[in-house]
Length: 226
Picture 1: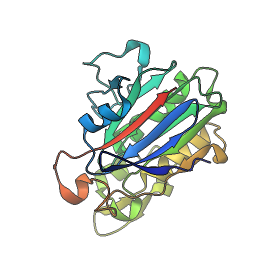
Picture 2 (picture 1 turned 180 degrees about the vertical axis):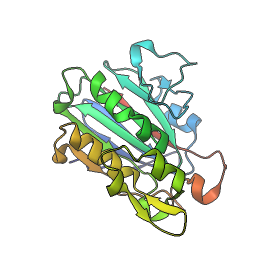
Picture 3 (picture 1 turned 90 degrees about the horizontal axis):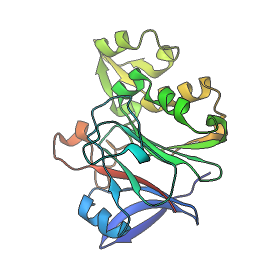
C-alpha cells in the first residue's frame, strides 16, 4: 500500500510517494504549473488538453498539442501531469516500475470507459499493476440529475453508484464505479487503493469546481519513472 508523505517546495504543499524507481503524487491548492516545473527541473512536464474523453496518449506519441485524458509512460525522463478540480485522477504503475502514468476520470470518462481502455493498453496485461485513486469529489458531495442515471443505466455497477437524494437528483459515487469496473476486469482488490480525500470537503487544501466555480485552480497529479 502506498503511503504518501507531505512535502513542501517553495512554501507550497504536495503529497508524494517516491522510491528509487518512481515518483507520484498531487499538489495542494496554491501550487502552480511553474512551481511544479521548478520542482522537477530539468525533467519536462507532459500536459494534455483534457477533453473528458477516453483517449490515452503514450509518452512516445505525446506532443505539446496532444488532446486526451491519460498518459502512459514506458521510460524514465518526462513527468506525466493530469489536472483535476473534482474529477478523479487514477495513478497506475507496473510492479517492476517499467510502465506507469495517470488518467483523468470524471463522469464522462467513466461512462466512456477510459479505465477499460487503459487496461487494454498496459504492456504485459493489467494483473501486475497497482492502481491509486487520488483526490476527487466523493458521493456525499456530488448530486447529479436524472439524465446521468439514465445514461449509466446499462453499466453493470449502475445500481451501486447512484443513491436517491432529492426529487430528480441522485448522489453519484465515481470512486465506487471505477473500483467496481476495475474489479470486474479482474484486478485484485488489494491492487486498488483510494487516498480517501474528497476535494469538495477540503476547502483549504484542494480546489473544487463544484464548491468554488470556475476559479482556474487545479490539482496537478504527476507521475514520473526514475
